[in-house]
Image (cartoon, rainbow, N blue to C red; front, top):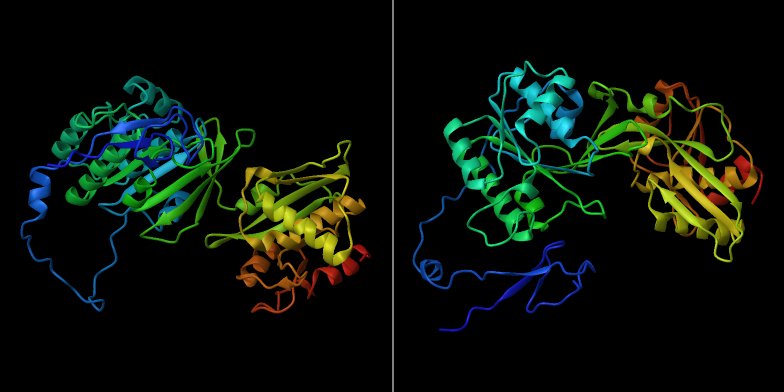
Length: 454
């Protein structure tokens, strides 16, 4: 019989190697590679060689009712979940330490329990007394939620199998320990085994399971990527500790739209829902100042207005700084290159700082024109006209490309009192009800018309 092959796996990123080494080639971390036991070569392998049962096949035209949903009553959470909680679904929630994941899930557990579901909250990081204290502080002590403080996965699954809850919340997946896996809690093997067992329980018993996952320094959920493939929904809880805003973002959802967001505000009494995030993000905006531009963006299915702030100053260093918060740094470098190459506006010898106000993170290319406007406004020390929103994509040739859902962007801007929109020419939305539209075809005309340069 052939000798089983040893496998060494990085406990940080999940990369596999044939031999041990001190540094992982995948993530660059040191002393994170550990040996994992190989798969059985005995009965399991022999069983795969036998004849299995035939699988029932169906066609694509089969009519099936949409999955039933239970709304929590927290509209922002229900929106991100796609309309409510689906039975037999597995949800993974990730976020930075101290961002409010446990607070959010305790409020969600109380809301679902009050709506009639049987809810069990299992904490592997805190004692039951600590969870009760948080519930009292949030005014949730009367909610019919059952608590447990346990890390042994076998005991947790036995309890869930006996109680048959409608919803089980496990905080967190990195603290779970499976006694049939020979590695420490939090390792790749343990996280993978715990996620597989909890997801299998959800599918077999019809109970929804919400798992909390820690994130790495890069903002990704710690552990192997296969965990995100196992579950039905992956949510990220984002925000800056210096701001009170928190954003729950869906990056994967088999039962609803992906990239949907829910906005919350951290208060002394817990997380409060924000029904109009645009008004909240712009609430602290004063008189128009150089470098300040309002961008009308789309997050999921909802339009959101945020303020982009830029600062351009002479650099005392030979290599000017480029600092970005809330946007893609490489895309900023592209915008600066297009401004210099196509419009003749240099930024050499100038430090450039760009910030998205309120702790919001923007990823869509429709923010290109707003970023360019903020940079030019800061460089020329000239504020844009008040009550103006900007959006549009910039190509490498300097042309402005239309973006999707322009009508929704304009309606949201008009709702908040904006009267002028600067946008690319063309696209489906050639009209804005009650708004003055300044439609540009390229970046050179934008620079000349708005800033009188170019």
